[in-house]
Length: 371
Image (cartoon, rainbow, N blue to C red; front, side, top):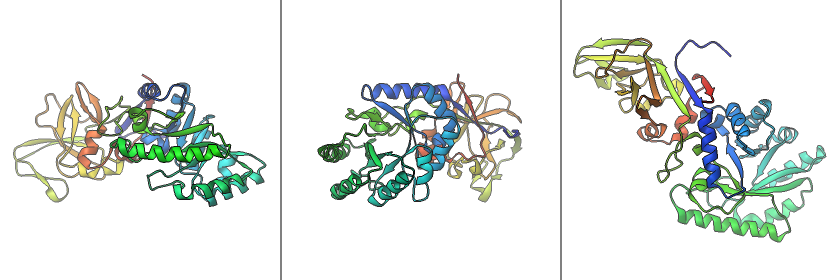
């Protein structure tokens, strides 16, 4: 590990993630397997560290977006099944088979190529077949389902271990989700009619796991593992990430002084500013300039002017307590009785908590602890 000199850091509470996992398990169908989505470096929380904690907590499966992400988990000692949610792609199949990364299959050409790879390696390779029930993304279209199953039936080196779909409106439209379930049930029936009995059937993401009656025997939670609610109709679980830094420099400016690029904010009174060593190059959204607050001594201090690449200025004039170089600052998380949730920042930035968390760059070191 490289030495750290800058105080900006993201602290990850692995216990909180494990408690969220336990809560999500209680919402899933009894006896269901749990697949934790660890794509995008576990939504910015550190995939190897989160995977090891969840494996110890009893998580049976992990899901990633790419072969590279799957290899990182294997290299960190994860032996559980790993599902490639976007498949291995044209060039990653050989590696996926060698490293026992399970492919999601969603078109005939991909299935045929994987079958050839598996045959060359003299293996029977498990696959999970994805049907597009209304997401309009990856998945076999219902109109192509019969022809697709004919092609799969001729792939002697592939074993249908799972069937899945993905809900597009689970956080906001039970009616639309019910329509997707109906479409999915039709596809499942077609598979059963051919005498195939997949071990796993899964559709529930975080919103589906928390919000619906569960028909299937695997759940795939993602964002809720890390605390944020998967939609406005849900309560958040326990936040796992705290983004903190320290004051780099303070200065007093007179009334009428513009601050930061383009002078989008000008002081109306004598003001004490604190300069923070964090900016949009760290993934703290530039759009939060003039909108968001940070916590200093457990009190909210507003950001003044534009967030810069490396620095952010906050107004600490009204903060009770001395503010100087080294004073702790929290940008996401709790300090004293005050809290700034990632969802609050996402709302101010006009985006979602997923983007804020995954946007924290590698320049922000992560630390992990079991509290």
